Length: 133
View 1 (cartoon, rainbow, N blue to C red):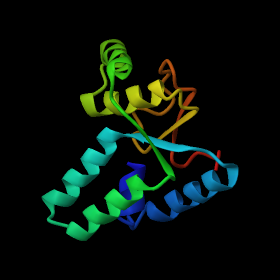
View 2: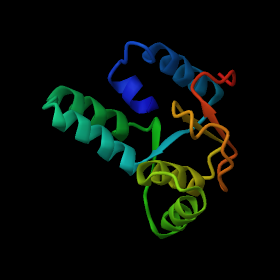
View 3: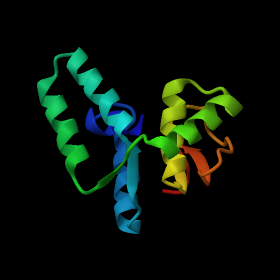
View 4: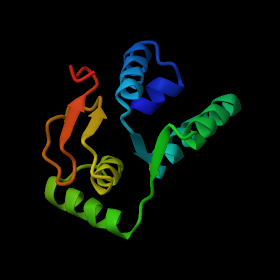
């Protein structure tokens, strides 16, 4: 997950994520994710009793750099369609449903099983190694 790699300074992927984020800022792209992402990241930090990491996560998500997508009634419709049609896991379907609700141009993932899938409401699903950045 892009956010884990970024906020935990992942040894293998952090440099690529920093490059993507810098290019997004240059292009004035909007970085968005769901409130579910915040919950998942905080869960990992709490599981490891990493208070400083939890504080960093909260601060990042409170900044104006990230647009938070809530999981509401319309998003639930996207979720049901994605789960019903494609059979993705509940967490993947939540992330995709939120992106579809936001009419995301690009959904970045490191999950090879999602790359290239045609999800209504999302223009492109690409890997982090995409040449778009």
